[in-house]
Image 1 (cartoon, helix red, strand yellow):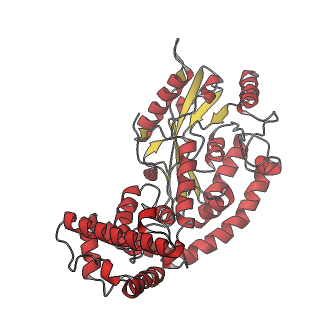
Image 2: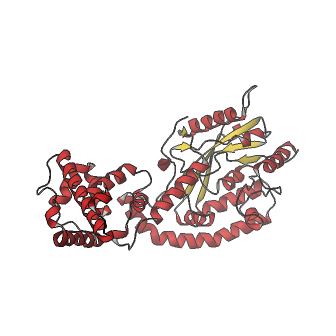
Length: 414
């Protein structure tokens, strides 16, 4: 298996990045709105017709034609390879309506494993499972379903979540392959112009409206020959073998990314966006907050920023991190900030504290405090010595103030 970047597996933005395609989308936008409204009206009639007609070839043909009017076109490849005796179809997952599309070609049922129950579950074309909570009872119910005679085949998506269908397949869960020893893989490829097929945090209803808005969405369904589990082959090995077959048919790669990995990545991206500061005083921005605003993986820049902050405490962290992003060097950033100090915004709290210290130095113990070097050191060693001198001076000053306040002798304080 190959591990690809999780960012390449999903579309986190609906609109295109290309300027030309975005311009075309803006021109198409009024037409898309009109199509969405018209198709929503037609879609209600499609739903009513599908409810009124009994399950048959005629029903599937009529609904398929009406779905074409809605912009959902279905193309089938290797239809003769479909095995009527197979009780389980295994398909990759691209959109929220994959099960509806496969059901237009052949009778099959897809269980609703999570989400809404009752009317919404039935209206979306899912099969509701009446069992206790947990994966075990669900597997038992589906196993009994597959063992029953005369029931339509099951259609399952072992990826358990959608991808953009362009890079790779999520790691297949092994539990669907425990239901039967023989399955038929179904390769699904989906294409749509102008806008992305789906985004991770979009609801099925929003995805339906975007489907109506787009000019068309084309589903390419390819039936692969049935596959049986070999003797001594574990369920996970069987799942990996089917995953490799589907990936080869689609021209994709097998990855180890799971549904949980996708959920964690989406949560992390949402957390990064929500933690972006809006109106915060520069002096109140702490190091931990900067870690969140820069991203959880950018610890190195944050650590370097703190090093610069130790040398130049009056410079805001956001100014330091912006310069570090360009230079990637602590010494260069310190030099830039010192050479451009007239243009560098200073922290108000840092200015007041620094001014208070300077005035205190000049009024009480200016003869005993040695200032830092008069010029900026040319080497890191010189700058470190200058910083150490300032720290020693501040420590001695604080020590003398403590002795004077409590009336202690110099000898007693040692």
